[in-house]
Length: 499
Image (cartoon, rainbow, N blue to C red; front, side, top):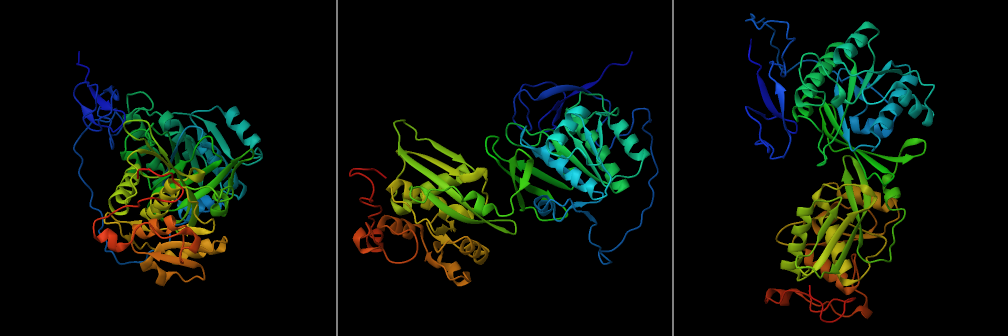
């Protein structure tokens, strides 16, 4: 009797080992290694009934780089925010992977897109591996889409799904919800394992390339926010989209992290309502609609998300701590970059927050990734530390270096024009970007972060001279050159405060 062979595969990263271990050597995660049968079913493996024999290779033609290049044919979903993220619509013959937290609205988004495409005359197939047909119909009825001509099925076998798709007319769009629930006979392991996810995704991608249908795969995410399963699936597909947002907030952000047919820095903003997901045409007005301009610790950042300028409020809270190690809590921004800004404020501006808890939040559930938010974060921190509220009609953007200088950022004119359109009249930007402003706003320029601290300490958070009733600034360049760094006493704080 032949000995049963097996291997141990990490369900997080796909690392294969000969024996079980509590911790994966590849990714370092605990309790992710499980045993699987080793039947030779990897990526590219065929059915088990076919013997492995030597095959003579065929000669294929080689072509040059020059030649006629045509634009990829697209299927427009008539959802502008979704089309923006995908680059103009779903490309025929492409595979798209959409990931997001449970309950964030992935299925709702796709059933709305499928209904609009079906209403436009396209054949759309929606295959659910997690819900029954009746459950999907109930969701469609709740969204008012019960009359859409979408072909619906509840199936988890990859072979049965492909046989059904190939039997009829080739659909324009195929939605599979989700890839972790599918299983194929070519892999002897449980659904959701690395081998099954990889084999099922490869079979569906092969069908998309051969038939010309656009295939959308829904993927679960882990506790770290990454799509569950092997990372090789993200390399196999043509586009990877993440549906982000807080479950308790009504805003949702669809972000492209990979797109072979479009930009990878575009976002689409949606609002979750009782009628499903509604598109937000002007996210800046939505994110800034409920802000309080009189409270300290809030600064408006003029950022860019792809080709779209976006204004969002950054909130900071600095409070004395009774703990030995102060807390640093960040929502919507990089925690390491916050530590850098705090170090620059301490080393070059004398704003010492080593004995204070620091809380930073990006309003609206948005996540900011560009370094242009450094100046706005620093303004919010200093405003909270001094108790001085920043001007309500001012915006901030600029990259802060480790030397304390403020570096220019790209597309300054687009940022300021969007701020001017929304009624903002002032702001602080890098001095090198003033020549590219192109607006009539009263924008001031700063060369170093210490200039921003001086303006806030003097009572002005934008360009212009400090008002006469606010007194003199607590430091100047001559004293800093002599080694007297810091602000001896900032307004809005009691005497004896430590910074």
